[in-house]
Length: 408
Image (cartoon, rainbow, N blue to C red):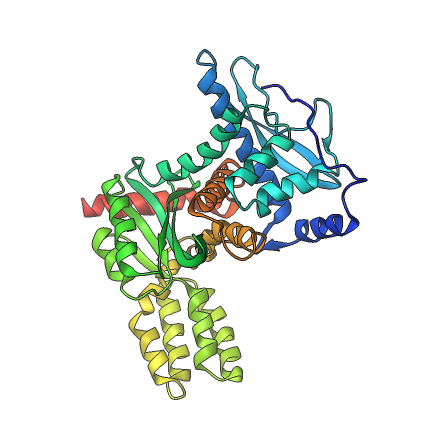
């Protein structure tokens, strides 16, 4: 797919206020994921979608992996993975011109608009067109529809039977439906495979508030698609979710998110007590093993039982589920103790939500942006296992084999 020069926003026509706003947003981020990274992930995802459109027309050619490239968006460095084909005939036209080190300053507005401000599929197609993606409406529709289709396939395609960990969390949003805004929840499930890589195994949107019936549908769907053996399930303390997980995956440990627990402590204890609670909890987290951690956890509960008996009673009831992460290798414990893994998806969605006026303009726009966020993550930062996971992978797989050999 050749790269053609297209009409673009030139520096002389771009107000200084726009440049300032772009720079402000490019420097922002959520957690450890900056919008600079999001741009790299988005461009990688666009390249994959372009290759898919190209291969649909060129049946004699085949996909042939990726290569790494560093580019500049204005003065900002962006890392991306560029898809290639066996013949070498394909080159993503969302890349800058041949022999260019990066995108010109004026392209920032188009890239940022596609990432964060496109409020309809028409606007997204226009941004793609102005980036020089293609003059063909069919190609533009194929790229946009491909991202949506990938998201829908992700919720239905067969799964492998084994996961080291399954992370669950819900993201509350608003979607425009006609002339009103409707609350909705995105149910996100991310799997940590035995190869150490993270994958989004389900990303389902349902209108209404987060509820247990929808979580049951998500989890039953995972089982119906082939998931059988899970070492650890991580989620927040959403009412009724833990028994459902234990029923579907009876050999799995269930870890309740300790970040949510710490937030609850702040609302149930005085400011001074909450500070002491956090300090004692850090000691528990650093425990040598689960038995030592359980003893220290009991001491923590004893300390605050008088001032907040109901809160402490709940903690004691769920002690094993707050300490399950201590059964696993030390380098990976932090990752297994919270639902922060899901924040990689939720963080991108939060940026998109804020820059789209605080809500999503339609279900199709939401699907487009979800598909872009998920594909970009898996083709970018999740294409390799994290260092903490890599350091613990052999031990995690050994624990997996022991547990399920005994169960068999």
